[in-house]
Image (cartoon, rainbow, N blue to C red):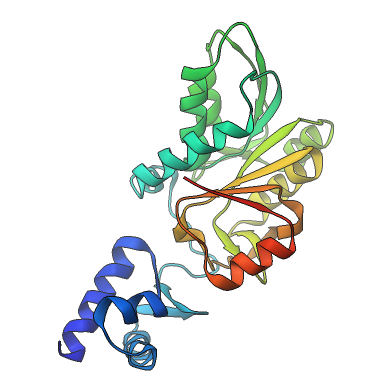
Length: 260
């Protein structure tokens, strides 16, 4: 295979999957890791990808890049549903107590599944600042829903601001399901928007247990604002084995990794 052909295939993989790993590409194409790194260097020089530790990501994955909720719902739908279904196991069979659900497409998938699974025998208290999650759960007979208000960001359909943060700080949910735009060994959990980060930080500080839902596209992502350390997490639910450095960091932080 010619280098140009291989590089075109690599670019297609990054566009489809959001991220590629050097070792995986070397095995896939039967070349050395040095050859793959040269390919990625050339693709980055051409402005087609962005190099990260151990691989490369799409050029749109810069620290302030953020797509709309509608656009994100169309990406990796099957993976997000699988993650959401696996994450529900954290609630347990009884399904009582209190749960906080963060804004995001994977957390919205979890909310949809939760509405179907909930039973009147064990009512669950659910709190959210996501207008999307609130809409999905409103009217579910086995759930007691509290929607936290504030200024709603059109891009994410989530309430933000001092009012939202203050309301969350007065809560102590048993469990919180958190979404993230990026997850890395060095920078932890991150998101492009400072207001969204402040809300997520408040949820992490309030909840007794933290479950992060993140598909493999989020690995090694480092967005503008960090809102949580790996040590803040109890469980990571994802759809693929994280990169080696992230696995090591999660292990050091005593985070359980559930692969859907």
